Length: 266
Image 1 (tube, one colour):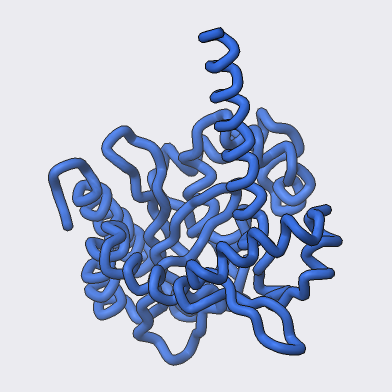
Image 2: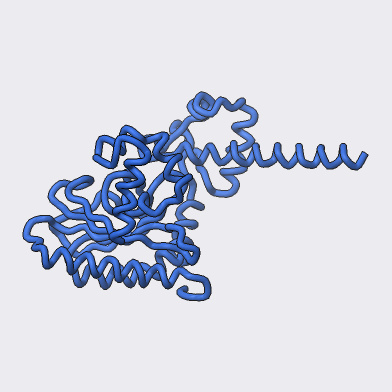
């Protein structure tokens, strides 16, 4: 009897997890290319029965995570903006990194970025700018190419082998096209060299005519959290100036890494 009760509890728990995951799948539908969804489009994409979909939508709408608009469909709700404000106020990567980035762009005219790695993407979580001549398209909240640009590649160079292998399996052609290697072993060696030098530099990979320099931000166990980077116009950057920028980026990222350790920082 006891064994049967335990099995039923596990089955019920599994069903609840499954329902929660399916509900979260609705939020994952909203992306830059498709920010408005009708229920019919959602059902087609998710393969979800109408009754189940509306039950999930009701829960999400009551929480303010989605909003229904007549004749338009569903969009993200106001709770998302509220959470964004709370994240900017509480995320130690941002609260500790913001003053470092502000000081950096005062010293080096350019666009500074703080980026986080999550799931299978690199996301800009904060931007500071002091150069009017260039503009980064990767402002806060916008995902960046996972293999292009210094801010992303320095993160790849510090991923755990299993994480990198999973990314490589789905993006091997992309990695090969930008010269990271035609096999997983070649890609790992390419990234090992970046990890060894402690920074990554790219030229015109995301925005033409600019140089990007990035260093990793790590947690207390050495796992990569994200990156700190700056983008500057390529014209007029001497070798001496380039080395100066590299030193400043590495130093700032190390200070931020130290502040992310337990018991330190915000």
